[in-house]
Length: 336
Image (cartoon, rainbow, N blue to C red; front, side):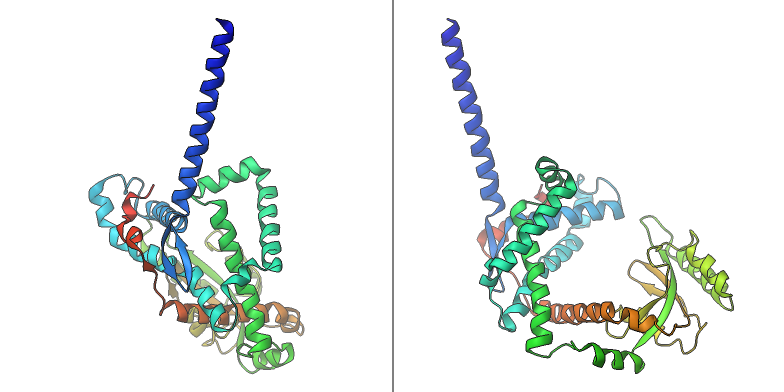
């Protein structure tokens, strides 16, 4: 009887293992199911799920927890969710479309150099999480799959390579440091500091505008030490940018850029600048003899990235995802 029971236990364990493997296989098959095509590249369900669930979480943090649980409130935010998700879904494919426009191929993502770069990033991510198990758990919590993460990293590496192609091969973007420095010195950069008041969920937007206006008034005519105190205070909600920095033409938000280049003299303070998530106030500060030269390499890199992103955004405006029948059948509100 004891031997018979051991065989039952073994049989049950085999059945359980088979069901687990079948479940994992079924889930993986679902995740990597094709929903359409964009820029000649297959678009998979796993990416749509990741983007949808990410923005569902963000919407809840903005509009209130549980909005997707109630069918009435879910419908209220359906249109905004769909518009956001399908726009974000084009990001990777817009990069790949521009790559192809300048002679790079989709197959380049399988080149040894790209694969090695992706492998390195994946290894770093696993190490940062503290091991494979923790990494897999983190992926699950982010609604991400390992396959999708590798794809996203490969696209990012392709965009890095695209910058070299645009600067070195096609001369579409400035790549010469000396010429870029001359361009900067010809009125194309402004040395500033700023304060920022953020519109958090539940904030009174007009109260935030008034807070930014109060900071603006205090910055006017302030001494250097007073300016530093204001910028380092808790009233400034963007404390990662405490030091002076350069705003370069064609790199920043157009609203911020317009205000920056309107500051004609050191000590000039901008009006309150409303952006999508809050309010900025800029103050122009004095440059040192070496401030531009010590920053020019990073400024050139930022400029090249910004110009590349502009090409990508322009391409994105012309791009679509051609959904297949399965893709057309998906209801974003039902994605779990």
